[in-house]
Amino acid sequence: MKWIKKYRLAKQLLATLACGAFMAMNGGVSLASAAVVPSKAPAETINVHRLSESWDKVFPEDSRVTHHKVTFHNRYGITLVGDLYEPKSMNQGGKLPAIAMAGPYGAVKEQVSGRYAQEMAARGFLTLAFDPSFTGESAGEPRNVTSPDISTEDFSAAVDYLANHGHVDSNRIGILGICGWGGFALNAAAMDPRIKATVTSTMYDMSRNIANGYFDNGKDAADIQKERKEARRSISEQRTADYKNGTYQMAGGVPTEVTEDMPQFVRDYHDFYQTKRGYHSRSFGSTTGATLSSLLDFMVMPLLTYADEIDSPVLMLHGEKAHSRYYSEDAFKKLTGDNKELYIVPNAVHTDLYDKMDVIPFDKIEAFFKQNL
Image (cartoon, rainbow, N blue to C red; front, side, top):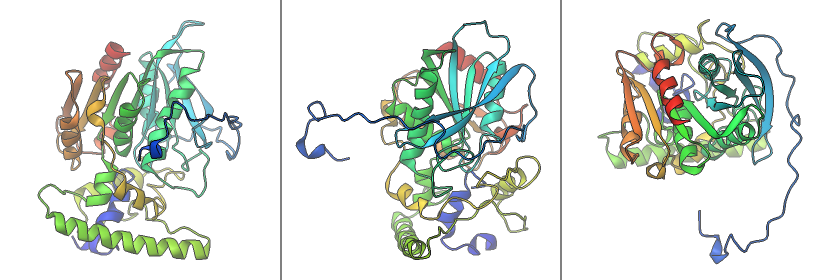
């Protein structure tokens, strides 16, 4: 594992590659009696840079669907940019079930989520693949910040948009999260009852990954805690330097070169993010990685805390040979009810579920959403 030792805070920094390569009680005040001050929603075009009008995706265009760019905002006032896909076969004036999609962690809509969205639109759904806040074509400064809170919120913001779209049946909205966005999807499903069905594909629990490092089952808890405290100290010192310098240290994207001592799953990430297969210049998995200071929030804000309260149907997909398989298996154990399923895709590794159309079980995804939306 000599390659990993080349990286400072190895387990925590490698976590940022993971899917990109890599409350208190209101002080006794009742929310029901609290004053609510309305605020004007932000203009939909605020802070959005020039949007690409060309087909700059890593997958081919499908003639069965139409596609165009849309913008919407989250509750923080950040404008998000998405690709809206609709089946050409839809009836004039009709309303469709809709699915919002995002992921993997570090990716943009031109890589993986858009591929899923286009395929599901061809199967009869209205779909929205969006860039997360601070990422890709979406707004937010500084660039490539990530947050367990804001990433969860972005899914609900997509639901806001779809619920108000003229071609969408607002009672039939689902979400699909890939890799790190699988964890955010489960978090959103626990938070937002408007989400009627959820699919995760090759899921990562980013809070667990960043707080504990890889393969934490069976590891000594004291050792994990020691490593986490050292990471907090070092990253916090970097925050001081960032503020002084007026810049942000980046955690680093997927390695641009393959070496013999790399773990196989890192090689797999390289083969997607750093080759023609999946490279995209707006993806921080392919380029700089997230801001280093983003890691701190994940270490103390665990996702999936209330996963056992998800009442709506959930389908979790993971590759049989994926290094990350334990994330889905452990998250699935937290789910309750008889409307949850974990499906293991035979022989697949983690990144096979990014783009291999003959491996991704689209028939199963289609059947799940048609049954539950």
